Length: 310
Length: 199
Image (cartoon, rainbow over all chains, first blue to last red; front, side):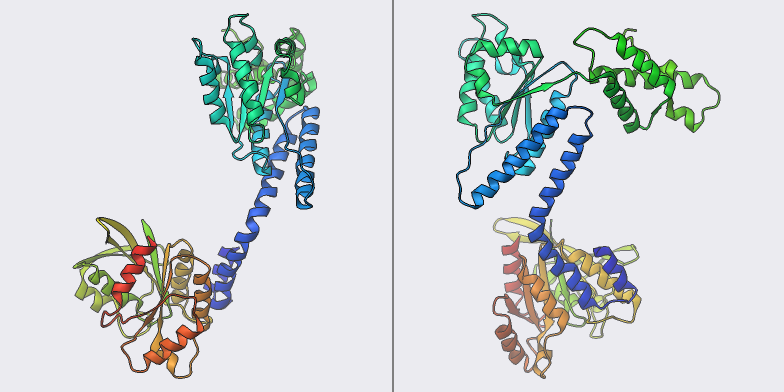
């Protein structure tokens, strides 16, 4: 807009005074308004990103709930009513490649925009980052990670591994330290534990207070074959490729043959297949003497191959 | 590097102020960069005397582009570099010449990116019952809303300029107004103090 008015002035359509007014008095007003408008704009774009994820209906429902709750809490605050501090520690259960980390990242950004979290960054840790090597080392390590994560999200992947080592393992110490700090910093830290379904259940049983400290449990269901196909299409589209109908059929066939429970419904598996098909396509095209633009675009059935081994 | 911009109407002494201010800060030669509206850039090195003769004149619209010089100002024990931009003069309404309008656009584009705004007005004109022009009033209003704004009441050496200054001070009590004379180099010390405070 500001460039428009400069052009208008250049061609002698408006006076300098009007130009100056438009440029500078509007800017001052904008600054005041900007703070509020920008936020809602960002929340919108993050929500669009979340909604673009395939499946995950329960996650989307949960996010909607939290947004509504936060907004109503703000209203209540304006009316001088009691407001609950929101405890949002979560447990994500699901097989690999079902979107746990992706969702955690989006939630972090969303909460920052909504003002639930101060920074909204996400610290991803695994067992090795919080379990020490000798007595007394563990609590220190946990403290360091917590300190880093304050104002954001502490995301512990494969959390069940903390409880796997048996009686003398320092993993237990780590769990105790985490439980303590998640109570201390419940206002400005969100802890998310993630792991496979069965193992997480075992893990939660190791410390009786653990389950009740996490008010939100989210199950990440396996993707159905159709959802996986949709994901494959989106992945290809993002990189400016196109799956032909035959390729889609072949992919469908491949995915249904993957029957072991960890890998069926795994988006990461699809990504690997798709990325491999790009390489296969490149190899196929290199043999051709003439390559059209459509050739560059299309992924054919022969490019799709499930086997990761070379 | 902090940027400062010198703005004001045409023929109020913007260029002369820049050259004399540079001299006041101890420069013997100035290295000047001229940026024309069409994107052409010209680098020139000249002595203060030559610059005064070549760049400034008593007629209107001598400067039709952005002219900037880099000056290092001693602050406490160290030095700070600032860029001082001299601009083409502003005028109310629509100027008939497109090249001058393009020069004015350059000024407007740079205005909000600058840390220090040095606004110069010809205070000797205010006496004859003439009010401050609209664009000057607009710049003052913009300046009040931000930091690093100074209003220089130039040509204080002329007769009756004091009357204009008093009038100005009464109208704009919240603005930092500094009487000075670019030609006779008075008041430059205060400008230097202001610039140091603002960087």
